[in-house]
Length: 234
Ligand code: TMP
Image (tube, rainbow, N blue to C red; front, side, top):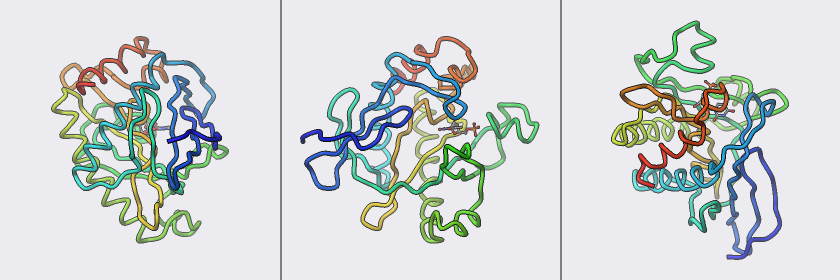
């Protein structure tokens, strides 16, 4: 497969065209941002961890019946993926109170929720990805009812598979964000699943093993990414 022109450079990844129909190459960077790009930094080795970890999880999810954009890992930082039209929704599941949920509701971080919650943000950097609901998404034409129902079904399945898998690795999945795309009329999982997009706590000590270490200046950021990588057997 030949890597052609760069199509897009995001905060953490670059996307390239290829000579294969419907296939793009994603290249993971070590760049890290938080608070909608206000805070900038580098997490050495993050691109490798996120690329390989995301691919590993996508392969597990595929086996469990979740369709994904994953095609083939090309090297440490690059992966071939199916071309999709991204649904402009950040889809977030929470199992335990943390982050913006804890802040908004005045609840301590770490309280186990009685059931997982699902929320949507409108993917729009200029607006700071505002919280919306499915009525807003329908009214703005961001997705159809059928697409939202399918996304809901898939994200709960993803949560079930990932909670079980991470627990086997000594990690509690506190919350996560995923994105979906349209591929030949089908909704498939796209983007990435990594310590950038999940809250991952040590199951016993509750040590944070994710991007909150960067967001909150907690130190040992690189170590946390490497620890997750190791626990997943990567
Ligand atoms: P939040 O508590 O800040 O709303 O974050 C919820 C989850 O979404 C958490 O696992 C981190 C992830 N997330 C992203 O992947 N990208 C983002 O831009 C933000 C704000 C959160």
